[in-house]
Amino acid sequence: MNIWSWYLNKSFMSKMTVGFILGILFGFIFGEGSSVLAPLGKLFLNLLRMVVIPLVVLSLIVAVNHSNPRELGRIGAKVFPFYLIATGISIFVGIAIAQITHPGVGLSLPEGATVTPPKSPKFIDTLINMVPSNIFSALSNGDILAVVFVAIVVGLAILFLRHADNAQQREMGELIYKVIEAGNEVVSKILAGILQYAPIGVMGITANTIGSQGMDTVIALGKFIGTAYIGVIALLVIVYPIILKLFGVKVIQFYRDIKEAVFTSFATSSSLSTLPITIRSAEKAGIGERVAKLTLPIGATVNMNGTALRFGMAVIFAAEIMGISLSFNELVSIVLIGTMAAVGTAGVPGAGLIGMSIVFTQAGLPIEIVALTAGINSLVDMIFTCGNVTGDLVAAKVVDQTEKWQSSKTSS
Image (tube, rainbow, N blue to C red; front, top):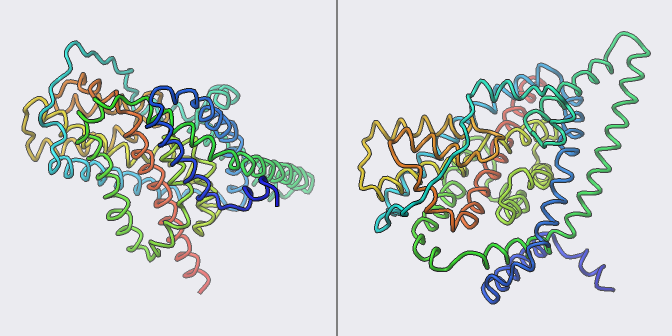
């Protein structure tokens, strides 16, 4: 057996784990010199981003044609309230854990630090921008919410063609649908090839991330980093399992099925870049194709549980630095404002910074404190993204469970 065949026969997770461990070792041994491996990681991210838009468009059109307009509305009515509730819970968890660990005690506001947050978009503008004035511009810019909207509209148009009274329209609809199905299979094959390179890319990303972090900064902000990881772990081992249990899901098996997406999101720090693997993991977890391919692209930009936890944690962090004590009413207000910020800034460049500035302003805290955490941003982004992607999959699984229950009641 040659080396390539041996490599292909190894499991995806074992290869990714080896790549991750090698990246950590290179990062610690060579420090900033490990940046020479950064192009390997950049190439991996570019490859994933290359297939994201075709995958979202084609898989959504196929998913819509396995459904009908009534089912689409029903799924949306279930998943969006779940996003809001899960986001609010995540902020609460961030606040609660930060009040136990006190990540800001002993730190001070950095002198001369300035942060200029991007202009916060109005929620209504976010909704309006979901409908692109130029389809091709939305595709080229990777505006995922607009891409989702366009794909659903195109999918519905093809669905109506396939079920039209006119025989010629039905024939055209079936022809277009078969072409799109074939295109979807092509993208799946490309993704399978990209995943063979994934361990090398993860090694490059990890080595560069570990090597570029100044150890003085890491030590100084050790409690902030620790709080971030404890908070997301609380989501993963307490909050999400309780939700899954309520809907009759076998938690251990579910996590085994989605481990590839969880690991990849941690390594890449990007929900959108992980999306192709997230969709593949959803299939392994038994989530119906219709639900997975409709909810996960939207969840990748709207459902930010890990980021929301960061908002709650960061408010306590900032308050401790400033020596301010927040009242219960202020904390409740922060949970509400943070929930809207996490959802309302979906798909906007610098969304985390915008959300932080909104929440800090609401709490009367200086947004300059954001600059204090800039040095370790890559390390905490890894775990927050892990919380985001896992939350997307939990939401999809819950909705899929309710759809299966509804289907079984209808059939009986």
